[in-house]
Length: 172
Image 1: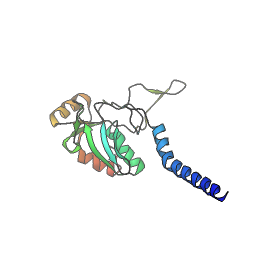
Image 2 (image 1 turned 60 degrees about the vertical axis):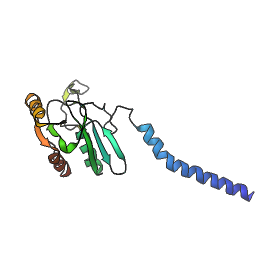
Image 3 (image 1 turned 90 degrees about the horizontal axis):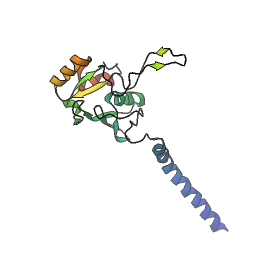
């Protein structure tokens, strides 16, 4: 009788430990967005603005855009290291330090042009969006200049963007 009770206690402890270890991972798996969606904002990932970033304790993750990555770092206070960005022209990976960025152009892959409406049909202005302003990477200055002339925005280096993000300044 005593050995049966001990076995039952051990079984309950093993199951409890297994649940404690597997539970959070199971919950994370269940709540994760489907493939092709950003794990942070749950929007579609885009071939021309994707970013790979490393988050302490989470490993390398792919997100929809640089703005989303910087927002995630600010909101969670987790150190975020940008591993690679995507060249807006070619869709190929690019080292962030080698890129020139156009910030705040009228091209924003993560958002759409449809206005947000209230139930009564009145337009609601966008006050904040984690993916805005758009931050698009280019491999060289000439294509970035041409894009900026056509779509607006400002040119920034990766170092400038990192500094603004670290100081919690608005990216522009």
